[in-house]
Length: 487
Image 1 (cartoon, rainbow, N blue to C red):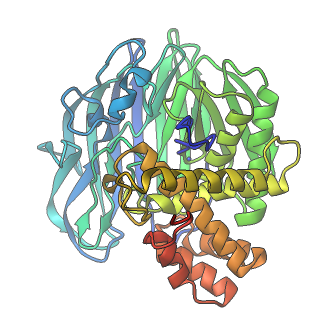
Image 2: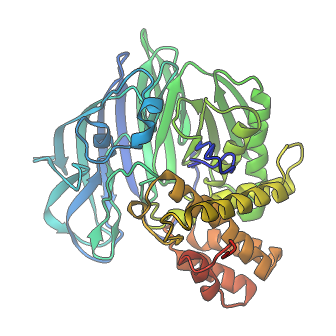
């Protein structure tokens, strides 16, 4: 997500402001079949069938599903919106969502819906018999969700409806347990594995649909329009619907779509999406999906990435909007193709996306940003941040923290985006540009469609450069490096 440090000027005018294919995979992906209807008064009635494949190495006696929509309910302990940005997110007054799970079944047999987790954020489903590795089970969940009126990932404004993280999605099983973090208000508190999707989405008539995947069928009814959307081997699924204008072009063999309603230069926005797809495809490896959509929408931050889909806030425009488009497009590789635990290792995808955005301006022509200027802004902003706070309680400049380890958006943004980009620039200067880009290509090739950890990135850079880099990475990640004077 581009929370996204659009202008890194320390006056804290930090504008806070991520498909179908036949991609091979070493394990069989699970599959989600979703049927959802959005009413004119923004109530979603949905059923989700998860044909879950146990790709762990242990039998599973139960499955856990993240219930991200529950974070929008009244009384939630963890709000998706930071407390200091409530008015901005809810310009028409505070609005809440309401999730009601009406039925759960396993292989067609009804079971109780048990909601658990730190903030009612998990649906636990007991299995009658343990699910052995490589075996599958079908879990069906029916629910309704009253959307809040909020400028966020899941909610609606007067111009569009954002449907992201709107369905129960299987928790990742790691290190002997399911990972089910609450919906923190900073960062992107998500963690999921690639799966196949077949989604039937019915929305009010006249609504265009920008979504993860490829629209296979569109059926117009009297008062509704129904889209059938399919995506293969993607990390999750999201859609934005509304009354949009649309432009399209090509980046290699990928169709690039731009949906907008208030853009004074839609051609420039589409060009930024196409150019960044081309540049990143050359630098990191070809984009494997058939379509990629960029959509302008009501959103609190600058932008947000989903597989084959990027949300761009309608509050940004011009050079800033195009910069956000580039950053979110970089996330199609860093988070989309190469996944990571975005709670535990927030810097891993954000630092790569931010530095990739800088690198884009080395290759692309016709833009008002340059690599050197963006790097200089990042360095001066970070140094000023440290100078300002080092005598006022700034005791932790580490990057290897989970989201709940940050004091707030400012600290999180400077540690993951700004310092993360500076770290990667230091690695690049240390090993050379050729080895650095080669390392990124290796990282994508080794971990495509999988979940990466920091050591995977470090290892890829070490192999490409034939140098030991653990100590250098650790200096940055642990907070030992100081980029400011000590006087």
